[in-house]
Length: 507
Image (cartoon, rainbow, N blue to C red):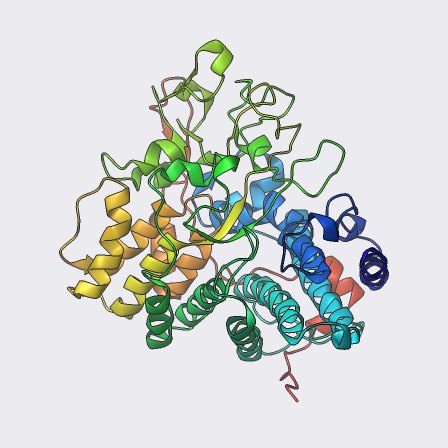
C-alpha cells in the first residue's frame, strides 16, 4: 500500500507541474508525513488520503485574498486603506489586478488537480472496489464543480477543462454550458458520495445537494432548489448554538452546521496549507496575534454595520464596535476591549480571529487552522426560504417563514410573520458577512435591483478621532460591474480567451 501511495503521489505531481510551472505554491503535494495510509481510518483508501489535499492546498490563494476581496469588499461590505485592495474598494478592478489573477489561477489549479486525480483513479480502476472508485471520482467532480461555480459567477464565460492533458489554449465556453457542466459534476457527486462522512470534514452527498441547490437558485430555478434544500432540512445538520464558534474556534471545526469547509492546517514550516485570514483582520497594533501580523486590512463598511438589527447576537461575533469586550483574546492581559479609534470606520471585523500562539498551539505568523466554511446549514435554510419566495416581493408561506425564522432565532431576533425579499437578503448579508457571499447574493437579485442597492450603500470613512465626521463615499456600478475581467496574464498566455465563447462538446 505504501509503494502504491508513493507512486500515486508522483503521478499526481508531474502533470500538475507541467500545467502550472509558474505557480509552484499551488502544486506542492502534501508531504507523506501528513497523508499516509496508516493515518487513515478504517474504510478510507489511499485515494481518499490524496483527495484530502483537495480540501486545502489548491484553494490557498482563493482564500488568502480573493474570496473576501471579491465577495465582500467589491460589493460594499468592507473598506480599506490598503492599496492592494483599492480597486476592489472602488469597484474598478482591472485585468492586471494581482488578487484577481491569483484567484483565477488558483481556481483552475483546483480543476487541474481534480482532473489529474480522476485520471489516475481511472488508470487504476481495476485495483479498486467499485464504491471506492466512484467515491474518488465523486470528490474530484465535487471540487471541480465548486471551482467552476466561483469562476462562472465571477468571470462569466470560461474554458471548460474536462480532463487532464486538455488543449493548452482552450476557448471559453458558453455560460449556459459551464452551468450544465457544473450540474453534471454535482449530480454525479450526489449519486456517489456517502450520506455520512467516513472522516470528519469530508463532504457528503448532502453537501453536493446544497451546492447544486445554490446553482439552481443562481439560475432562478426555484422549484429545483426548494426540492433539494427540503431533502437536507432536518436530516443530519443543525445550527450550532454559539455562532462565533463557526469562525474563531478551530476546535469546533466541522461542527454539525458545517457542510463543506476548507480544511486548513497551520504548520510552522509549510506555506499554503493554512488560513491566513487572521493576519489581515486583527486590528492593527493590538498585539492580538502575538506576532508581527495583524494589520487591520479589512474594515467593516459603515453600510454593513448599519445592517445589523438591535440585539443581534451575531454582531459582536462578526464585528468589533466601541466597548465590546472579548475575554478570550489577550487572556494574559485580562482580555481585550475594543476602541473605535482603531478603525477609520469605527469598527473592525471579529470573524476569523482565533488568538495568539501564547494561547494556542495552532497559531503561527500568518497561520491558523481555522476552517473556511463554504457551505453551512444556515445557508440551506435561507436558500429554502428564498426558493419558496421565488422572486416575489413577499410571502406568508409557513414553510419559508419556518426556515427563515430558525436562523433569526439563533441570532436572538424576533420571528417574522411575513417574509419580504429585502428581509431575506438583509438576513443573508449579516449572516454571511466576510464569508465571500455578498457579491454573489447581490448579483442574484438582478442587475437593476443590485445596482440600486449598491449605489445607496455608505462605504466611506470617518476623518476624526471621535468617528463622527463622515467622509461619504458611494459606488455607482458600471455596465460591467457584475462580470470581472479575465486576467491579462491568462489572455497573454492564451489569446483565444478574447474570442467569443463557443459551445462545449459534451459527447
